[in-house]
Length: 334
Length: 190
Image (cartoon, rainbow over all chains, first blue to last red; front, side):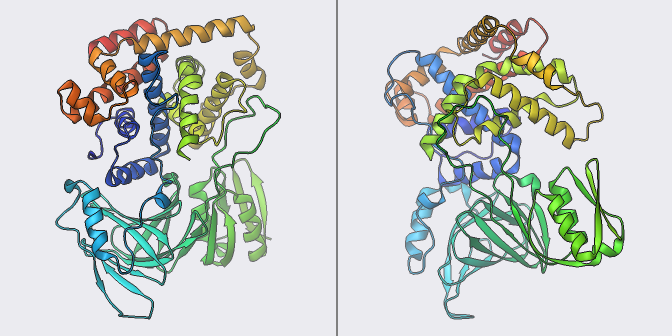
């Protein structure tokens, strides 16, 4: 039983989500809403972690030393967005009817505006392409082997690209953002045309044909990059640090750094735009001392959180040099 | 995957939550208004929840303190705060680690007691719901049937109980007399 996005302060919302998750009764729709909420703000993620822990502490305090029905670690159900693979793929060539029925059964009726129907229009365009019309009027063109999972609610339109790549012609609806998820990469638009392709296990490549699209990795929506028509971006977020055997115990070796070595692919992009992107994401700002540098186009793969490296490359490309100041990196012509 | 996360959540519940009050006080004292304490605490939890494992952390309280400190520094820097309160390394270790061990143990016990006190303010119905769920292993539906209320009521009881505890924890940053204040608030709510 899902609820609409909870109202109230962050802590109050987090409390509602934590209880929903702990009771293990989040529907696919609820889970999608939770993902949107978590992705919107790091503070949401923190508040959610805190609420879950406090709920557990609260339960433990009540239960005390008494035996529990489920052993010590109880039934906190993981609802953080890593469950795609476990969910049955909803759209598959040749299984459209099943899809409609299964999805309708798994979602609360309140979530839909009208009936949710997926129709397939066969063989327009290239061989191997499949065109799927969503009930909101959007059209998804799936390339060979592409699979998507669609959840349309009154507040959001969410598509998960399970495999392959797909192009989306998004019906305009400002009130309902259209978010495509590829691994841990999210691309949001209200009305536009863009394609998304899976990259590795967690990444995605987004290419915008019309309009503009916001792209961000994992929970870092505040670091979203705005892509405009003709631009493309490949993000391949790193895995969270894998558990390593640690024979020697280290006491508090500093806090975890957000693992943010997300990569940005620049494909014939003016340095000015690339700088704007990096500056949005980093506290160290790059300054172009000479506007002519900004017009030079650059190609390559860069770490989103390493302005130094980018500045060196940009300087090399433009024949300039780099000068460092406190919190700034200046690129100027020699 | 889910198991790993549960372990971390349980660890946070056991080792981190009890120290939240002390950290909030430290934030209020050291950082005055330079950063939003709420933002810092949430950021710190976000970072800790992102850990892949926690069994290498010998001193969770110190770890939490340091995470809060760097979160505060990062947020202040991002906000471009001019009135940065700089905390030197010695200052930091002076605050956290070099106090006599017995003092720290005493404080930890006190913190645990305070959290327990917050929990004791939960309503009887809320406790009953938790018992049915945790001890008898009932689902929300079964719990609602047993208590003769709607499933939504069951959920809301838990949500309200949790919200009260979260709020009380957050009230702990008030200077002095915070515990009484927090409890008053709980009673007022409940």
